Image (cartoon, rainbow, N blue to C red; front, side, top):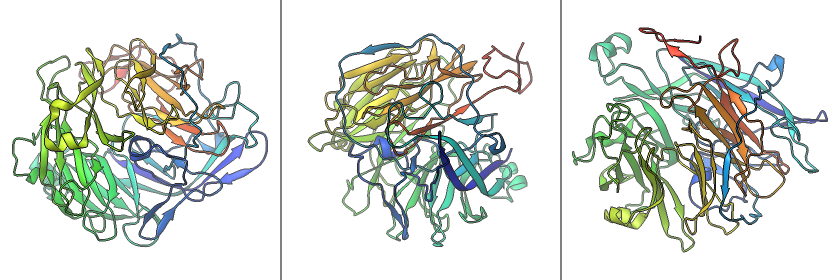
Amino acid sequence: MDTTTTMFDDVKFSSANNNDHRKLKTLTHGGDADFRSGSCDVSKPTTHKNNDVQLYYEESPENDDEDDDVFASSDPEDGLSKPLMYPRQRAKVKTVRPVGKSGKVLRCAACVLLIAGLIAASGWLIIFVHSHEKLLFQPQNNSAVIGCSYIEVENMWITKLPKLTTESALRMMDVNSDKVLDVILGFATGASHQEDTCAIYFNNTQPCEGGLVALDGRSGQEIWRHYTAGEIFALNCDEDLNSDGLNECLASGRAGTLEAVDMKDGTILWTFDKTENKEVRIGVMNVYTSLYVTDLDEDGVADIVIMHGGDPLAEPGQTNRLAGRLVVLSGHTGQVLQWVVTPDGHESYYSPVMTTRRDGTPMILFGTGGETNGGALWHITLGDLYKGDIGKARAIYTDAFKGVMTPPALVDITGDGVCDIIFASFNATVVAIDGSTYKILWTASYPSSETYATPAPGFYNADDVPDFLIHYQYGPGYPVYYQATTTVLDGRTGEPLVEPYLRSTMGTQLSPLTVAMEGEGNDLFLHWLNDCDGHEGEGTPFRFLEGKLYCHMP
């Protein structure tokens, strides 16, 4: 199977009732940290500097992505596709206390400039534009700025990467110093540790199980390729680790893979599998998206917190699983500075995130549990983690049946200047937690559903509190889903703002994205809908034919 990457030249937005066209001249990628780490002061313009390439907001704010940097459109000749909307049972919403006004203007950085054929399954990205009654993103008040109802994109280049697949986000960096942002993505090859496969299909490259590749932002031509011993599905490229003026990427994924890679030529600075502490690294466990923290070992380079977890060899329902490990690493050398087992001894598939208490204390948030085993959302101070005092970790939210696996959106919805925590638990419930008190603000439940998607924050209605697009899947349960629903939740109360819910035939693991736009309630949400040709929106139960790789719909 091949991977295809598409670069868009222009992205134009048209308003619903005039002929005004607004072009996003510069589209930025803000990384996972934009909504999920650090300060909640998001009213300031976003500026990112990398080798004199500056990305900034002008009169038309750029867009922001939440987890995976994937953007695609329906056929431009047909215009925008509209959703098939079906009635569905109303969500059960529990409001604990009212939420005050925020008064902040959310500004998000994003990268909608790229389309990547990153999903091996059939998937359509439907961009919905909401009017007051039906469409998805038009303002619901008399805002002076009219929301967009049409989006037009033009191809700049298309690049195919034979024999590669990818679950990776895209990262944007100028790696060849031509003042144009280039594209970085991780990949898998499916070689599965077979030396003969590497010899036959990858020119005897060892290892060849995965890696990352840099593509020229002007032409799509490959600049360099770096192979690794496991699939790369997570990238953090937010820090310069070797003081060369260009950020490095922390590439992580399956089989305990974590490498710091120089973006100029794809060479390795250090790798996690070379650690002298053989107890911390387990070869079958994954490494999820890394988190940069302050310089703990005082060597002048930011240090790193990772979750080393997952148990891919365990069967669904198996309770005896490998416990996750929180690991603190030197950003300069990759040396293990500290590591601890999860406080409940459970597995973990969680990318740790950091927030800050009112007194300035950095807090690490992490989750435990899996698809068929219970877990919790935990917090611990960075100082206690660095000391290895995992006994001081405290559970914020606990589920006895299924785990907490998806990172939260961190955004202030109470107006107190502290990031609040909004996350979608795997077990059918969206939870908003006060970042100061850790008390639940509201919950929204979707019985008999599951999700891998992080909520996407954006201003959807006329108030000044961010709202959240969420996505849940329905079916017998992991890993089989027959249909999925999507809606937007009011950030104040958790009540759904889009009814009937948007519905698709199959589930998706892709988190939605946000594009920040001018005007109240004009933000755009981008998300995937999966449908079977000729069975759009049906959600019909299917069964796997014995010995076949495809499913049959009766």
